[in-house]
Image (cartoon, rainbow over all chains, first blue to last red; front, side):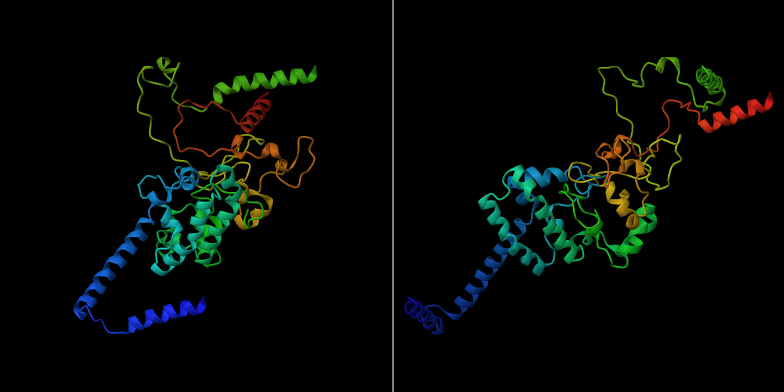
Length: 199
Length: 162
């Protein structure tokens, strides 16, 4: 069996090593270039399509639970009409980090296929675990997705309430705390917080 | 009998004083007394602009000692349900060190027989049943509430005159 496979691989290798007999060099390079453009373009298009809210809430698990919860929060509707969509907070914007997150998301495809959270009851039962994943991710990257919009360097403490200014100018400024340490449950409902630090 | 007399005396004094000590505000004209809705029933009037919640973080003086203190900050989106109590993430005894928020009164850790409990009493769990934020709005109706200190002071002055 393995010998057979090796033989096939060897045949492929021999063909690959031989110079082309039928096609010109120009055709091969140009064809390779065009195929590359199509592949890369297609990959990026698929990536950006999978990075839209419409794609996220095409699954009822997302639309009926987390998307509904988000609609009453300030990240969905507010006086100036600036809003965050799912990937703004849940997918890193950097290319490498984004690809890493997308690879992790293959587990979410698994969950979708096998209906891990396909009823409200199952979702509620898993809420704490899912929330903890997100808290851990944001804690590890120093709340990167928050900071894509909320840049600490441009925060005006005088425009914040005394309470907010006191916290931001001490714990956040010193790097001892990061956004997610205090701002949990700002866009979705919280799970049972028994035993979570700071609750 | 003595106490009854005392009570009626206090009541009399407060009735007499309420007229002289009432907070002066524009009285409501007679044609507006029945309703504050100034539009026919079949017309949906434009609602007034939403008022801002006072977010000063400065304690407000209570009007009487047992008044539940009002909340001097915004509580938009605070989740208080079976799973979480957002208020208690700052006002719980164990959290006040980090948050520097006032601890909920010790009565909140007592059951109805005054036995102390380790955690918040279930009957005190839903904060906004008693505690509410305040709006930066002008009064629609004059408030003639008289503070008890004012009543006592007036009483003392009256005694001194006799």
